[in-house]
Image (cartoon, rainbow, N blue to C red; front, side, top):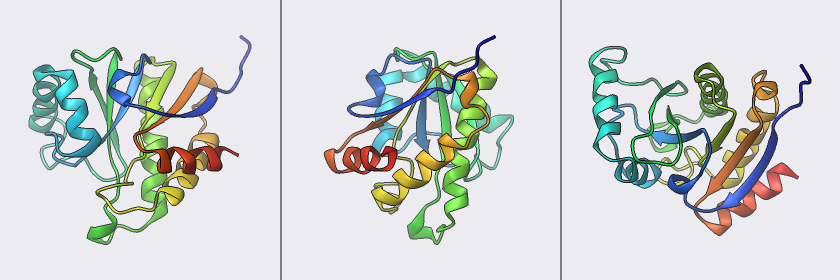
Length: 175
């Protein structure tokens, strides 16, 4: 089979409307919804997403999803097939290690490939309420995705950014 690495792109938009196999949710460790992207995804996906997340908390993650880890659920009413939940480091809580943030992107790609996704959309994990600088998130995200061993198994990785400034940061990081 002919292997080619996925194409990478950055767009300004609303991740909940993306027609890709999997979208990544910048979740909190509770997996029960929150603000920002997390709240928007839960609202757009409908109650089945929360139900699946509650089941994950009851079974696999009774203490919550660890920072840097990723887990997938169905996507409810979203156009995507899967939602991959990852918990970014919270700079305000002293979680300043770039390796934790890189792990969010790598673990999400691994999970995407595991469930059979060929296209993945990411938000700017940890930018925003978790206090990381958008340019730093963009640089770490792009490096993590470009160096991922899972890239050969994907067709498209799209960064979907809500704000023009964050979009610019990702355009710059993609070079």
